[in-house]
Every structure is written in structure tokens, then in C-alpha cells.
Image 1 (cartoon, helix red, strand yellow):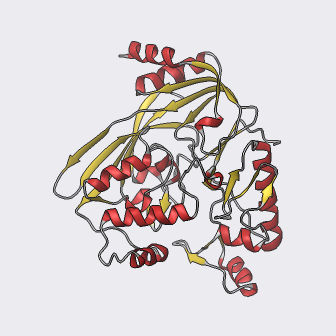
Image 2: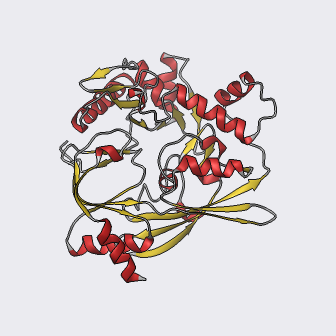
Image 3: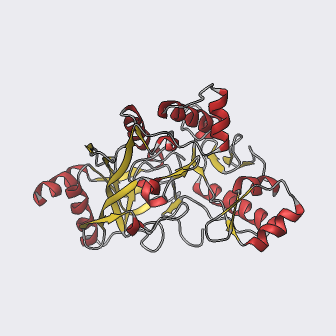
Length: 359
């Protein structure tokens, strides 16, 4: 078994592989070494090889949430392409397990075709299954953590397989232990979700309710909710469309900041139109998009070969031949404007690969 993994890894190992085409932003230099791994065994072999060669490892999934440095990555990039979907039904719920390399949206469509509720609002999101628990991906009022039962992951240090149940993942808003204290420690290999056969779709979000009403869907099906979500995302250029420069992005570049009630009241006193959402721990979540636009960074702002999307202030887009340097400059300009205008720090959402601290 172990031997076949070594063979698979050795066969897929390449040098100087351009990373830009493997990301939705389309920016970044080459990987010094690169391997596409379709099995856990090949991943294990890759980790061991990199350790022997004393090389850093970066794990790439769908590339929809990464900004790769212009100089690329001076180590081994392992692309996780473990596929397969398995379904186990019992009376209460249907457990669907997917390989981390499955395309996320194809997986969501698969569950909806089988009339399984729980992921419908997460339609149209780019990337692969393995990334969703990292971020606790959420959209239109639904989050991964609501249905996720467990993840199987490979510990980079020891190359051993571990399993975490939902509680052990320590989910928060766009967060988990894998993005927090354990960042870079594990590689997702498989994810299991508990879905509701014949369950009603989650329609909690005003924008989604309005869209469904416009579509005349009074008792919306899962498929209707999926279509409505994709339509809303497309309007915001959040669905990857190669013909549309606006969609060459990492989606939302900044997280919605959570602030104290005092900070919220201070900003709200200057502008009562500010959207805000109370959180469970007594703080207030603000809209990063609103803050950015009010700080004077309009949609369609141009910065060299990059800019903000004409449809969505939160997205930084590659207008063609963009560089990571330009993305980082624009990121800092936006952060500075929001800081100066509101005293709020915006945190970038994507992972930066090969970017040095001085950049």
C-alpha cells in the first residue's frame, strides 16, 4: 500500500509548475515542485519526500482563496485531488461523505438532486470540498458547521490520519481550528455531512427571500433555492466566469469585522444606514463592503492591473496581467482608508502563499 503511494507521488512530481492558472485570481509565480495527489497514500509520500528534502509544503485545493506571490513558492505544492462520494442513509439523516478534491458546487448539486437538504444556500461557491471546513464556509444564512459531521485529515508533521467530529473542529464565523491555532497543520482528505432527506430548504436571508418571491416560488424546493442563490451570486460576479474579468478574484477579500457595541454605536451615530448584525457573544458584525464603499473605495476602483469588482466592493479582481504586489498594495490602501474613516481593522480572507512578511 505504502509503496503504491510512493509510486503515485513520484509519477506526479513536476518542477517549476506555474501556479497562476490553478487559482481563480490568476496571479502568482511557479511552484518549485508540484504534485497532484489523488490518494491519501500519495499525499503521505509527498509529505515524507518534502521533509527529507527539507522543503516547505503548501497544500492547494481549488485555488479560489489564495494569493500566490509573484516569485511563486520555493517548496512543494501538493494539490489534493482525492475524489469520490459515498452515501449512507438511516431514518434520521443521510450521511454523505466526499473526497476533499471533489468540486464543491458539483457536490452540492449532487445532494440537491437526491433531495437532501442542508447545503442548498452554499451553491455556486468555487473551490473544493476540503476547503469548506477550514473556513466554515457560509452564505445566505447557512454555514458548513450546521451539517458537517466529521472531517478526516492528514497531520503534516506525523503523516497520520486523524478524524475530528463537528465539535472538535471548533467552528466560528468563517473560522475553525484549521484556520486558527492549527493553521497549516492538517490536510483535509474527506468530509462527512449529515443531510435531511426531503427536508425544507433554509430560507433565512432577506435577499434570498426577495429573489424567490420574484421567481414566484412560494414554497421553494431545494433546486429553486439553489438556482436563486446562483442567480444572486452571478449578479455580484461571485460565480467564476472566464469571460468576465470581474469574476477573476478570490471572492470576498475581507472578512466582515466584528466590533464592540461601543465601536458600533460610534459609527452608527455618524450614519444610521450602516448595516449591522448582533453576534452571539454580544458583539456586532459589520458589513466590510459597506465600510469600504463609505470609506471612498468605489466598486470598479482601478489600481494598476488589479482593482475592485464593478459589482462588489469586497472583491479584488485581476483586470489582466495583475501581480500579487498590486493586490497587496490595494489591500493595504483599502485597510488604511477603512482604518482612517472608521477606526476598524479589516482582515483579509485569502491565504497568502510565498508572500514574505515585508511584502
